[in-house]
Length: 353
Ligand code: GDP
Image 1: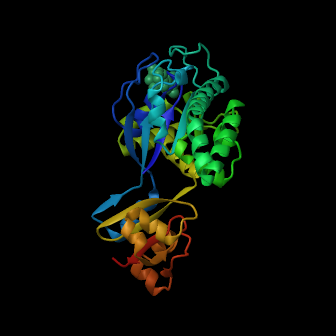
Image 2: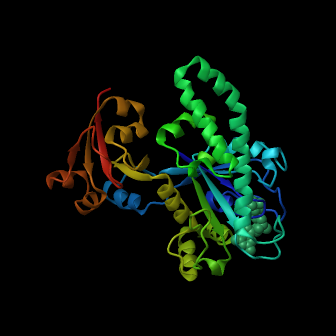
Image 3: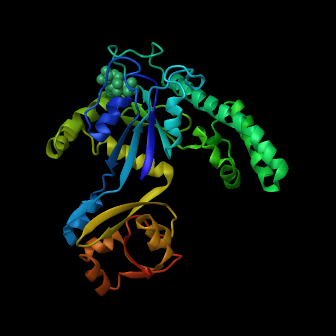
């Protein structure tokens, strides 16, 4: 499943948020370095459409898509140089698909701030610098090897040239993702696993009464406002009480739902469904994926042996009470290899084994 690393300076609310997201009881201490080991939590993606489908098919189980959140140990100024927890955290971020940075906006004077004042832009700059420095170290280390390879092998020349270009951008303080590289260039440096190649999502951990406030842009993005403390309280409640609590606060959805929605948007992801009497299930695919690729998310055999996909839109499936109704109404489409899957499609794959 999609994996997202949560980073941020110490004491910004990462652990609180992570705990709320994963509903595991966690340790949120009022001092820096509380989070030492990375924690991994598998979080179901909230999607009301699953319940609507389950009402029709009455499946034995409902399986939501999942996002893996990795709570990454405290990042401080100098981490790329081995300060604080040093390079250990960097290794953990390398394995994630995206980075979600929690930025402190809440004012609570009882919670110490590592740099003594609440200053989101400066905090973001600190983290960015560490990520950029870590990437500079990675590229510098790889360059001699890439140069050697480029002398032996013509196809490696482009790799070497791209790495040099990337290093130049990093040295000017830019994240690799913001250098405007072509797809070919990005592919050429892919195996360097650079941290700043990953999409960044910013979360503003705000005071409860700031949830509706207008936030300043961070790195060209409006951050997603979340109150980690409220989310932690919500996570303690059962579904019904949580709903009442959210209504009281004027929230239409949980921070988790909002966060995942934003992450999907950022990463260009969407869901399609399979539904029947055994299970009703959501699957995550990139926007633009064709039917065989979507089938491959279930099993590689489905992709290899793909014949066709019987497909109905979510709306038709619900309105016509399932597959049979869709078939009778002529709304069950037979889609082939070139079909571009749409968000919410309910699909049934036919394949050769
Ligand atoms: P981390 O070091 O980034 O993982 O931060 P923690 O989640 O451990 O939080 C540090 C401290 O800030 C804890 O005492 C939390 O209770 C507190 N805290 C976290 N989020 C909020 C928030 O939204 N509002 C307030 N007032 N305190 C918070």
